[in-house]
Image 1 (tube, one colour):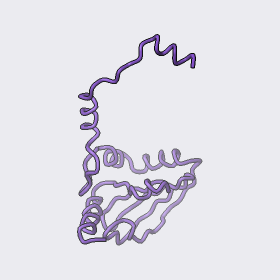
Image 2 (cartoon, helix red, strand yellow; image 1 turned 120 degrees about the vertical axis):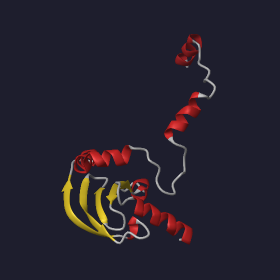
Image 3 (spheres, one colour; image 1 turned 180 degrees about the vertical axis):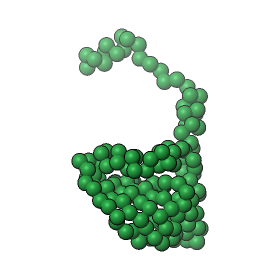
Image 4 (cartoon, one colour; image 1 turned 90 degrees about the vertical axis):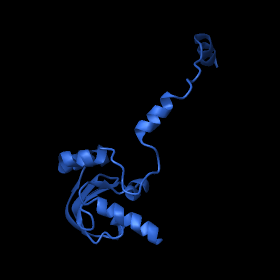
Length: 142
């Protein structure tokens, strides 16, 4: 990891001090989902693919959450991932919902344009030509 990458990870870790943050590495690797709050030291909620929910705290997330020492405080098995995610929403409350869905940019993260900009770009694109009714009937017969 370069110094620049470490600085970006550290800034991201620090930005979680006041807002719930999703660990994209867990999600992108299709291992479930993990959410954390608290910066270097804080709290986390993790959902496994099979619906196991683990909550607890962590210490030493420098430069990133993957380096932290996790202490499990409670676990509960739900029937599936969706049921466990519903429990996470209830546990996290209004703050969790606002933090997850506010759309505020993350520190050092600008991979794609905002959804609003993508929608605006699609509105200005030329319309897709539509088939006439007779063309659709020909497709059905094939």
